[in-house]
Every structure is written in structure tokens, then in C-alpha cells.
Length: 477
Image (tube, rainbow, N blue to C red):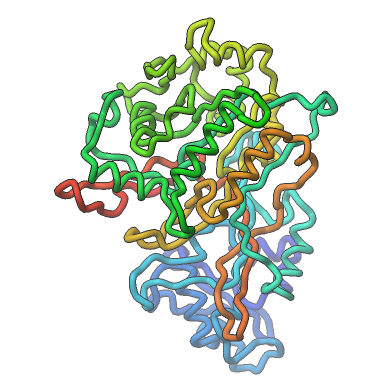
């Protein structure tokens, strides 16, 4: 079936083999191009784990099992391969590395290109279509970039920096100030989100765990093992400066908008464990469990719950929230009329808002009237994390690049200095690994929006209030 689709577009001549990992019973799992035409064969899927990384390593071990035409001495097909000589082009980042604790079970694709995924609000006559992709579908530079990558993969540097962008908008020459910063929680403030199972964390505004539990959740959620020093201390300093800027005298409002089934109180309590809650005026959580408050706000030094004002459109929740905030700031900030938030947010407009998150969706080509025009995108990456093994979709402002804090602060003070800076649109990234020579292969990685808008928080189990197990839930497509 794949071959026939390629033939319809006259693309089949560029391929030597097609393999189908999840084919139907009775249908061929592989076809290859011989000197006399395309032929059917059975690749050795049954002898390896069901993961593309294992397939690529199996290809390297014995190319003839996957390219039967090698026996015909077809020109251009190698009889010997190394894993680092194979490039995988894919739109699912989890295909680039399999989990595991041994060399046999943990396999990594050394050179890979991640094609961006996106939701199309109106695709031809099919209406709204989720999780589309296609190299070059949104950016013609994709083709050139992939060729450059195939020719010189070592020239693509790993990029774990936060990136800031001010889009072109009407009235940009007036340089409107930033009044409101909206942070994501999962992957922007946290490296990876672990929520306590204690039900009081989701219901009690004054929940206080013992010191041992508190220390562990602060360490796993906020502290980075990749840099020296305390990330929590740096976040506290940054948030204080953003809210009440000592250099410019500006006052700004900080809020959190995230998807978290545990609810706003749980997010607040996790922030409190690290001493990070004081600078925020409100926390809004979507997809909360029934009975859990979706909103909390701070008035004076006291936090209170409230009900979020509307249902958010699926697939476009951030623009929908921004639209609602602009229409009625008081519905999202229920503080009294003389509260600082009320004064700061007077005459709020779209350019006064900065989004800080780790989602490519916010800066995608999927434009809406209320798309953020000022955006700080936190780098996303996959890595081995403490005793949790390989984790996908990790993040955290400043988790891998300490200059992130100053980057965001400078952007908020003068966002017009970042105008026209393009977010990376190249096909993507990969892991820095050795190619067997003296220099590492460092590849560019770019964030996609794959499943992030719908992912759920990760939970840790407690054992004797000391031992944390692996997350109970994984991210969902």
C-alpha cells in the first residue's frame, strides 16, 4: 500500500525498500527494488523489539536482511553499515530512542530529523485534522535543511536555549510594554512534572508535607542535575524581577496556564514547596478532575479558589484563554478593584502579553486572531533523568542553559529587540553522540507540539515517604 501511494506521486524511484512494522495479517511486511523491479519479502521484525531504534540497529548489523538486493550487488547499497551512518526522518520523537536499562534493550538513533507536526483547522474538504505533518508542508527550507544535514550532520549544534520572538503586529513601532506573563507549568517551570498522590495536595490550600517529601518533590520537579547551583534560587530571583522590576520600576502580573488533572490547588502546593508561588497572581488549570478547582488567585498574601469562566476550544486553548482575558481580565483575575493586578491590567491588549512555554504550537503557522505576538519558547529535550531512566518531553527554563533567565528578563524589558527573529523551522534535532571519530555529532533539535497540549501530569508513588517510584502515568498522544 505504501509503495503504491509513492508510485501515485512518482516518488517510488527514490527508494530501495519499504518496510511496514504494523502490517495487517496476510499482507507483505516489506518490498524491495531489485534489478528487475519491486519484489515482496519478509523483513526480520519478529527477531527484534518493536521499536524503530532497534530496527535501525538491526539494519546496521546485517543490511542484507533488510535489503535483499544486496546479494545482486546493486550499486549504492552498502554491505556493511554502522548505526551512526543511518539517518531516520520521522515525525514521532519517541521513535528516536527506546527505553531500557541494558545495551540490548536501550537503543538510540544517532542521526535523526524530526519533522514538525501540527493541527490543521481546515484541511481541504476534511475540516479540522489533528497531528498532521509532512516535511516541507509549511516551510520550503525544510528540503534544503535536510540535504545539508545529510551531507554535514556534525554541523548541526544541539540547542537547549530558550528562544524569544516578537511577531510583527500593528502598532509595534509604539513599543507597548509587557504587562502580563503567562507561564506553562509542565516543562517550562518544571523539568518534568511529578505530583504528590496525597489527596490533600489537590484540595487543601494549606497542605504542608513533611520535609523529606517536600525536598524530594522540589528536587525532581525544579532542580536541575545538568548544571551547578540551585535552579530554584535563580527562578525565585527571576520571578521577583519580572513581577516587580528593580531596574525599570515596572510592575507586571504573572500567571500560570497549564493542563493538569490534579487541579490548580495541587499546582499551587507544588510551587509552594519550592517557594515559587509568591510572584504569581493566578493559576489556571484545564482538564482538571471533577470536583477539583480549576483556578486559584492570590490577594494580599492569601490564596483563594475560583471557577474558570469558560470552556476552552479543543486544540486552541491558549488563544481561547487570551481572547477571554482580553474581553474580561477580572474574570481571570478576581482580585478586588484596588488590587495591583487590576491597575496593571488596565487597557490590556494582545501585545502586552508574553507566553512562556515549551510548546511549538504557540509559534506555529496555525494563525488565529488571538495568537500570541510575544513568546518565549523553552527548550525541550529527551534525557536520562536521575533514577527515572529515559524521559521524553523534558524542559525547564534554565535547566540546561543558565543564560535563559537573563534572556527572558531582557526580552520582557525590551521585546522589540527580538522582533523578526525566526523560531527554528528546520526539520529538527537529535542526540549528540559519537560517530566513531574524535568529534561528537551534535544535531539541532526543535520542539514540536506533539501531544503536549493534551499531556497529563506525572505522578510519583510514595513508599514510606522516602522512596519515589517511576511516574504512574505517561504522556498521552
